[in-house]
Amino acid sequence: NVGGRPVVLNSGTGTYRAAGRRWPVGCPAWRHYFAGPRSHNAVFVGVDPFGPMTGDFRNRDVPCRVRLRRRSFGPGIGFLEFEVVATNAADGLRRCVVHAEGVGWLVEDGWRAGPDGAASFGLQFAPGADVAIPTDGKVVASLEGVACRIDLEPAWLEPAVLSGSLNPLGGWVALRYGDWVAAPQMRAVAAAGRAGAASLLRVGHDTAGDDLEWHRDASGVAVRWHEGGETVVIALATGGRRVQREPRGLVDVEGAVACRFVVGQRVELRRSWS
Image (cartoon, rainbow, N blue to C red; front, top):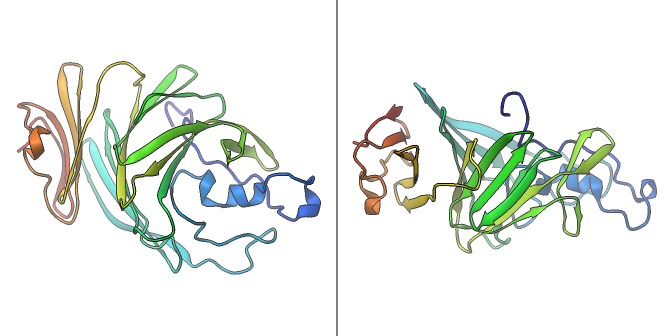
């Protein structure tokens, strides 16, 4: 939400009715869409981990829970990490979020690479939003004077926008039960063999300006860009290790605004990287 206005939102319930006799012949599988992972702001790996729906509701309990693994907060910056615990294909899905106040959100998604197909990533925008992809890896959205920008790590490929699409089914929002409207949805797929990829969301950024540099190694992921005469860096270190001080020249700029998180140590917003 920006100023109380939702820009990225959940697709909603839509309907609880899946039985064919309640829908015209040839109608899309609306119940399966709204209840399944394709309509949500999450990573989707290959197949629906909850299985097909043959009726209004799934015929068994789905043992799938989300666990808060780690969290840490400091002045102007915070970190949360969640993991899915399940007995199906969703098991091990992980999302880390670093929020740097006044800067943006670094989101890293992780999954267990397997034979079920490549992972994909979706973001559902509010009805009325204007969403465009001016260049690969850059998604720009605006709604009633509010702009936001999503930059994708190069591991996310083929970003596209669906709005009111029936084939493939995507880009729909149910603001109330039984009533849904077309709304832009961004989708991207992960490079083959990857088990994780990141994105950066910033509010108030349009197509103009900075190009980002991404860096990833065994210690984590970092992103750097120039803004307002300053160099901004957001980094996420995993496994209790630090992102290298000078990973291939990514964060070796004197006086950079460095937003750093080190798992199990501390969260801080600093004027230098040390």
